[in-house]
Structure formats: structure tokens, C-alpha cells
Image 1 (cartoon, helix red, strand yellow):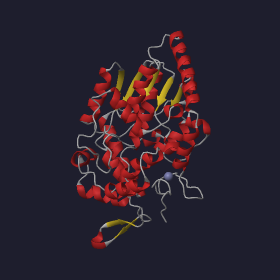
Image 2 (tube, helix red, strand yellow; image 1 turned 90 degrees about the vertical axis):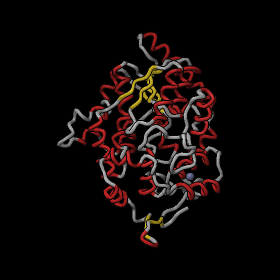
Image 3 (cartoon, rainbow, N blue to C red; image 1 turned 180 degrees about the vertical axis):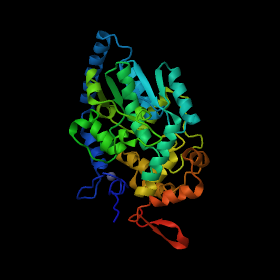
Image 4 (tube, rainbow, N blue to C red; image 1 turned 30 degrees about the vertical axis):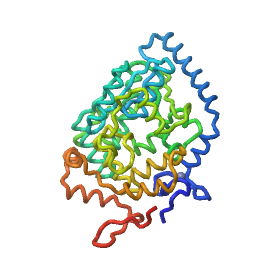
Length: 374
Ligand SMILES: [Zn+2]
């Protein structure tokens, strides 16, 4: 039986989420913990790290102080701006190409570049990228599994190549959004095992097929521990040092970069926000599949984050989830179908294969209905 958190509205069908005896999820508990953290102390810790990085860059004649994995969205852009203009670091921004690039993402990357940033855009072999996306859409109902591996591996590969030993990732998703934190340290420093196990699910080395060789998979393969140790690479989460809130990140970017583009439609399909996850045409399908597999859509995801940051009431969240969670991703549907090389019938069959029968039933006139909804 699906239960919903008593504070936010996340169901316990979300992978790895844990509810306490009062029916409160661990993302909500984490948000209470965030209120008690001495952020001033964390900032001092960060300043100390910044000084260490600057000293090390100078001593070793490095070209850049750090790498920032950068989609061009509000989160990674806010980090880039802060690092450069508030803390005086010289970051190299690294983008692992979205599966289906769109205009909004291109625009926002160009705008930040004009503010004075160097960046690297990694475009993996598009033939392989399509094949992997289709494969994981079929097998796991998630077209972004390989992309997830690439977005993790790419920036670290670049860091190694440029001899830059510090990487700043955005937020630690497992603690921010409800998941399984392997140890206390992983909220601050990226734990590779946690990322591979939770985000990607297995090692890209295992994806070799008749048509995809190990070499083809190299953009997706995380460098070995041995390679990382050669330059003593450490990847930090920005959310450890500064209180994380997607709405605050957006407001910050808007204030520094007036041409930051939000969803031109005024709202993104499946949700009420217009400022989050805007740079890949396949994203609307990705979030729709979460709804299919786990029974919560993008409006639930967004509103839970806002409840946890005291930016929305639970009542409002319920209203928005009921209104938008089930919205079908029709906007770029034809392009997505052609990218996945599927026709509409094949697509529907795959979607329904991934419906969990603890979550869905067929109701009147054979329409799919949630068994238990908020
Ligand atoms: Zn909760």
C-alpha cells in the first residue's frame, strides 16, 4: 500500500526513500537538519578550501582552479557565478551534451559564456547515445541511464586531462530528496560507489553488445580510483557548504544574468514551474516515466522540494500535483519518438510494461488509474 509523507507529499514508492514512525520521509527530516546547521561555519570551511585551492593552483601552475559540471541550468550556473565572482576562483565548466539539445539550454549556456567563462562541451557518439537511450528506455523505463553515467564521468575525465584536482558538484541528491546515504562524509565529498549504485545502477563497462564496443562506452566510464589518486582528485557537493534551494538558485541566477531563459511556454509540462530542468527535450518523458513507474510526477517532485524549503504549503502542493502530475509529455513527443526510433504503439507498450501493479489499475473504459493517490 502506497503511503505519502505527512509533511511533503512524496510517496514511499520513491526508490530508497525511508519514512520514520511518524510517517515523515527522510528528505523532510534532512530539511529540518538543514535548519540547525551553522551555515556561517560551513562558509568559513568553504573559504578555507578556496584558499587551499588557490594556493595549489599557483604552486602547480594549473590552468583552472576547479571543474564545474554544468548543464546551463539554474543550479550549476548559480554555482559557476558564485565561484568566479564571489570567491575569485577560475572554474572550467564541463557540459555533457543533453540527449536532445534544445534552444533554451543553448541560449543559457551562451549567456553565461558571455559573462566570462571557459567551457568544454562533450558530445558523445550520437549513434551509441541513441542506442543506449533506447535500450534503457525499454529495459528500465528510463532513457537517461547512460546519460546519467556520462554526466558523472565526463567532467571527471576532463578534470584528469586538464590536471584539475577539484570538482564542484551541485547538491547531494540522496540526502536532499530522500534516498540512502552511505555515510556522513558523502554529503560533503562525492562517494563513487553511492553514485554508481544509486544513480546509474551498474557499471557502463557491462553495456558492451554486438554493436557497442568497450571503446564506444568510454565517455560513460568513470575513471578508476588509481587514476583519480594520481592527481588526488576530490569532488565536493556545493550543497554541503551552502543551504541548497532550487528556487533560491533560480532567483540568484535571474538577478545576475537577466537573459536567463525560462520555459517559453510559461510552465513546463507535468509541473507548475518554468525554471527547472529545461535543457533536454527528453526530460519531459523522463519525469513522466517516474510517474508511470513510481506514481509521482514532476509537480510532486517540485512541490516537495518547495515544502521542504518553507516555500509552499502542503495543501497547495496537493492541488498542484493533482492538476499536473499526469500530464503527458506531448510537446516534443514526435522528436523523442524519432530519437528512440519507436512508433507510437511500441512506445505505449513499453510505457505500460513499466507500470507497477501496486500503483496502477485499469478503471472505467480501460483507462489507467492510480490505486492510491494524494
Ligand atoms: Zn517528506
